[in-house]
Amino acid sequence: MRTVTDRERRHRLARRHAVAPDHRVGSVEEAVRSVVVLHATEPATVHLSVAARADVGREDVERVLHEDRAVVKQLAMRRTLFGFPRDLLPAAWGSASARVAAAEGARLAKEVVTLGVAVDGEAWLRDARGRVLDHLRAHPDGLTAAEVRPVLPGDDGLHSRVLTHLGLTADVVRGTNTGHWRVSRPRWTAMEHWLGEVPAPATVEDGWAELVRRWLARFGPGTTTDLVWWLGGTKGLVGRPLDDLGAVEVALEDGRPAWVLPGDEEPAPEVGPWAALLPVLDPTVMGWKERDFHLGDLGPQVFDRNGNAGTTAWVDGRVVGTWVQDPDGVVVPSLLTDVPADGRRALDAEAERLTAWLSGERVGTVYPSPAMKAARDDLGTRA
Image (cartoon, rainbow, N blue to C red; front, side, top):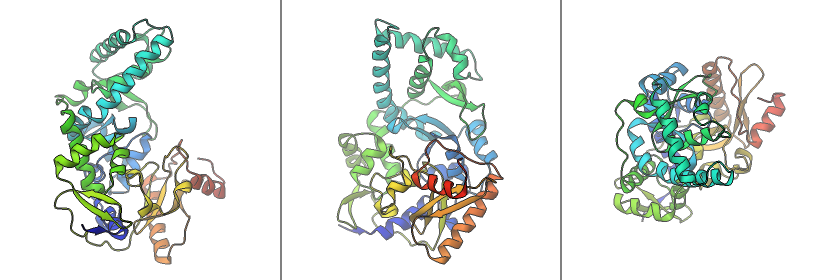
């Protein structure tokens, strides 16, 4: 069994995730595929994750999201919102989204009974889903959540939960954003209006297998624990796809078993020195459950108590700090460990690049890490 060192894993990350400047890609779609899906809990993350991997502007990301619709926001793994390449949606609908939909539907049906809204929660949910979906189908351009609310009078805000459930079952989608690129105010739209022809969901088995295949192609080698966490699943769900794909077992540097796709066992080419600045919840820092090979002991400073990653500064495949913006919008890296002078210069160059990309716009977050808070305090800024 071949051993894959931590050093090799960092070289794989640099190349496959398109985060090393020499390995950036040429389009928004390629940037998304480099990490399978983009975290979209905060709308700015989608734009900033792409900008870290491709020389494109905000208008390019907006076009792909809202005009080409080649990347679609979908609630899936771990009940998290992601930006999916359009062709990967059926796999998610048949597996991760369906799993979350079942749990969310059961929870909502029970809750409406507890609230005294209905005697039969499942019947209420079926009726509520039908009403909302019919209303959205009658409005091809979509409606905001506030505009949907009157469809369920006296619903105590349950319309948002119904919209979420309809999104999980691929009946509706978060369509055009009516807010700024940093603010999520979507028009909920019937899926057939947004995509045109809607493909059928994959089977459960095929859906999980495709998600596992794409993750291994970009994040492998990874442990079973990594996969279970990323998928929001169980060991039972992971085992069959690994078998069906013929995944190959390798050993990590510390001796733990991990998996790669067949044909991916050979050593990865090395990547020259590089630096990167990644946003809150970027897929690279969030891609593994067991992150020591790139994070070291910085976890408590880089992640909040709920496991959400703040902004990260990278040098040669390791997280070395965070970054924030000063009151004028200038990007300022903040180091948490020693970095050689050439690494610091590379980070400064990336900070200049990102500052220019943002053009003075400041990006806030509801997930500031302890390191971000400390860096902001040093600069005398809160946002």
